[in-house]
Length: 231
Ligand SMILES: [Fe+2]
Image (cartoon, rainbow, N blue to C red; front, side):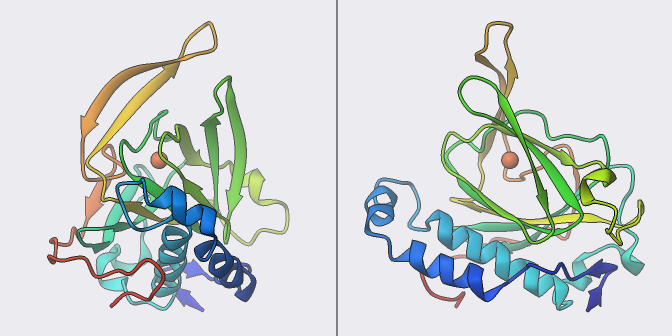
């Protein structure tokens, strides 16, 4: 299936992932932790929302929000909000080479992502140093409170020799944040192995430096249940 120039990744929306989500959703420890958080949605719920968002993108349900003709920007990151309510924002982000987010957190919001096409390099602060991992199409990640990372489109070589992705094909990911983003702080690594916060930006967008399009108005009351489908 192709929609807006996107090819379905082999691993996305697998029944194995759904089963894993279900196990996470019923984990009693997870519930206890979640009760102290500023949202009733848990990481597993956000992973599911990004999974469903990716499936909807592939099905063409958001084509009206995307660049005409599937011509994704090649110079700058690009983002559009897919879902907005009081509890969660869901975004699609298009990534371009050599344009990183900078090292940042998500303030008081939990987050999650599903890579839809291409690959991302994430550099996460583990308390002592930055650790890199590559997330390719179909991969998911969740971000608890306090997660500090830098994200950039992975070099094409990260996709491997068998990749059918060309240099002009988009690298896309679907992100969910709950509560919806209100701020992000940025950091630098000091010469003695610590982080220094350099600035905090009030923003309701996950990519303040990116071009945004198709921003949806807040429709009002929350429409998501922690374990159920979107109502
Ligand atoms: Fe982030």
